[in-house]
Length: 181
Image (cartoon, rainbow, N blue to C red; front, side, top):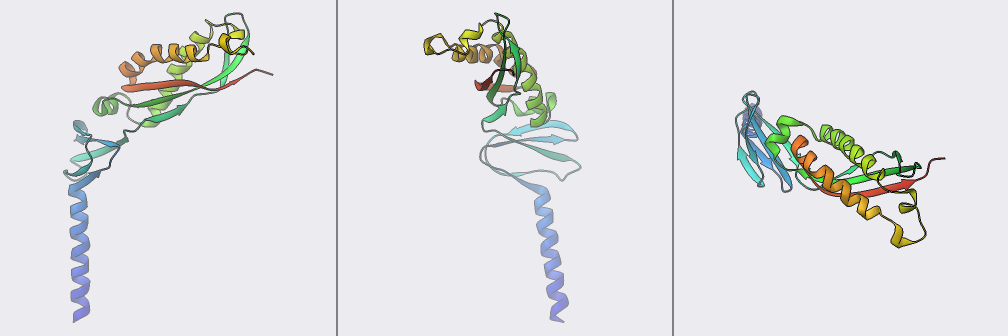
């Protein structure tokens, strides 16, 4: 007689735990969450903690990492002002500026990185075209303009990234520089 009672209590405990998990969720440190109700965003949560919610068909939780993310740009050719080709790859440090607008406009981090890579590629190619080859490859360190190029790309891309993709660009740098064969 003890065994069916223990089995019943265990089953009820598991069912109660499942019900509690459907009504509560945790936002971790360094994470933001967007709560949607019937597909429409209703609130964003930026503070870590335990929060209430309605079960799945009514509310859904989208979680995003709110720490600084790193994007590794593509390594491709660009044309300098004096008509020479160089291979250049940038990296960018970015984070989500407004979680609700990010969910509405972009949706996923992967889509944001794809879009941000295209934006950086555009501004990188425009900026490289303003410098001569000798300003990228030179034995004289004072003639190099890599940091100037990084700053120019950051300043130009920052506004577009915030407006289009709701991401805040913090840093842009040259990850790799090479010469075509």
